[in-house]
Each structure stands twice: as C-alpha cells, then as structure tokens.
Length: 488
Image (cartoon, rainbow, N blue to C red):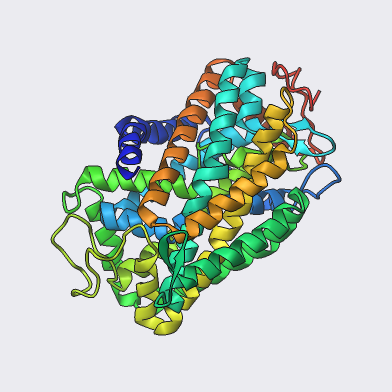
C-alpha cells in the first residue's frame, strides 16, 4: 500500500503541480494588483463587520471554521516534515506560497460566495457549486465533489488524528501495549482514539452551527496561545534569530538539502497547511452572511496569513532556533546526535523536542495539547466540507441516511488514523490534497478565461468602497455574471 500511494504522489505532486500552485498565486496576485497587500486593513475591518443569521454564519465564524481547517497538524508536524525533508530553506518557500496563495484564496472564496445556494435554510457553496454554475460542466463538478468527499471524509482525517495519537504517545508514554485486532498498539493511542472520536461525534451530530460556535472560541485561543509560547522561546534565544533567518534564506537557494527538495517540500507542506487553491476554504466562505461576495474573499485571504506567516513560522523558528531537527538524506545532525533517522520527520517530534529543550517535560505535553486542538478543529472543518459536497450530490441523487453514513465513516477514519503509522497516513492525505488542488486550480483558471466573476466582484466592491457607501450591494446581472441565482 505504501509503495502504491508513494507512486501516486510522485505523479500528483510532480513539478507540474508545484509550478501550478506558485504560478496561479503569482497570476492572481498580478490580476488583483496584490489585493493581499492593498486591502490588508480592509481584511481586518471585515472580520467583525457581519453578524450570523438563521441561514448563515458571521464573517468571524466563517474565518474560524476555515482556519480550523487551515490551522492543523500541518502547522506542527507538517512544518517539521518540510524542514526534515527539504531543509531549513523549505520554510522560505512556505512563506512564498502563502503570500502568493492569499490572492488565490480570495478568488476561490469569492467564487464560493457568488454561487452559493440556500439549502433548506442553510447556506451551501464551494468549488462543485461554482464549477457547475459558472463553467457549466456538471461532470467536472461531480468529480470534484466525489474527490473531496473521499479526501476530507476518509483520507485527510487520518493525518490529523495520527498526529494527535503520536503526540499523545510522546507526551504520556507508550510502554503499555495492547493487542488490538491482531496488532500491538499502545494503550495511550487507543485511549486517545476513543476520546477524540467520542467528542468529535458529539459536535458533528449537532450541525454546522455547533461547529461554528465551537471553532470561534477554540481557534483564536489555541492559535494565540501557541504563538505566545513560540515568541517566548524566540525571545530566550533572540541572539540567534538573525542567524536563523539568514539560514532560511541561504538554504532556500543552496544545495544543502537540494533546491528542488526545499521548493518541493516547502510548497507541498505550504499548500497542505494553508490550503490556498485546494478548494476547501470556499465551503466555509459560502456559509457566511455578508453584504458582498468580495468581503468574504478578503477575509479568507487574511486566513492564509494567520495560518502560515504566523502559526507555521512560530513552529519553524522554535525548531530551528533550538537546533532540534534532523535533515533527511543529508549527513548532518544539527542537534549533536540527540535526533537521528529513527525520528519520524512526519511526526511532531521535532516540535516537541524543541519545546522540551526549553521547558523540560512540559514541552512535550504542551505540543500534545496544542496538536489536539489544532488537529481536532481541522477534523470538524473536514466534516463540514465533506457534508457540503454530499449535499451537492444530494441535489441530484438521494441516498437513505447519506449524512449519517458520512459521519460514521469519518469517525472510523479518525479512529484508524490515530493508531496507524504516520508515513501512510500522510501519504494518503497528500493524494487527497493533490487531486483537489489540481481540480480546483485548473477550474478557477478556466473561470478566469470565461469572464472572471471573482475579479468583477472585487472591482465592484472597490468601486463602492471608494464611493464611501455604508451598505454594500451586489447585483450579478449588472456585472455580467450569470447563474448567481442567490444574489439575483
């Protein structure tokens, strides 16, 4: 299985996709005149400018739901993997893909708002919806919907829960072994799996409102606490900070870990972490109650900054500034032999050792707790995305109990992922992310050629903003945007 999945990843994550992610981000940055910089203050203002309604959630709740998907195990274990396989220079390329990807996040999230629907009193939208309505290709929309259900309902949850299980085992020990279905599994992992699945089931059976209310409280708290901890460690090693920054920039273009490895792993883990272009963000964006589609596009562009430039950078600086990492396939052990090839670069071990080197045993426990909240909220986002795509398919074909089946399947994937090895879980997750990114980025590029509704929305929003309006309006027919039935 590992060999088959690795072979698939070598095709999906070829240089073509890496170039597509970077190229699309640069392309949309130029077209929007770097909206991620020009309207940064507007992004902050919009975070708290809308309120939830009976049908939709507020902009801040939509940001929290999307951030719960973006801020996950990729911010802790994913950054460690990028450094472990690509060298410190991979961090630079994570920054690049985040900066450019913010414009891609605007485009896809604005599209999600433009083509959203009212589904039995609840807003629904996402790539499947805008591919069908704007492109007119229902078969393409179905492929994306089915791929996304498989990826976010079955493949990706295992990555998040796997990191929770590994972190718990490192923090609380895995000496007690239990025979479980013919395998020897640590009691810590099994206990963790049961707890995670139980809490997850309670929340997802409560619907999107319960998910939104939970994430709007947990996500800001967990992200802020993690960043504060990282800042504390950086301040304690402030004298080393200039050298670490210089190392990141120098290694990004030198053959220490290979320029190709640094770019490849930086972009792969960058896309995995911030999800810009992947097609997941538009689902939460579409659920928001806003006056104009461009508003939620801008809010989602800001979420990419929070994910990568803040949280991922916090992890990277903690690992690098404490020298607690090992670069794979390079005969260099930075930490003086403490870490070696026996440490899985796909696990959160680098981050836990970084904190442990400063805080002692509490460091491992802190990462385990942070990773639980990061990964758990991502599981909630994955469920909502999968449910939205099931709802899309349900518009045409209905299956008895399809939502309940989805919930049980996701919970099973979470349990399985918690107790299995990291390498296979991450590889399966990469397959899902890669296919979604291919389908979505190609889709939004085609939509640019077919009239670019997201850019029209941005120009309309800026025109009203410059005119000083207090209440924004959106009339798709006046802008030449077709099939945006909700706004009509």
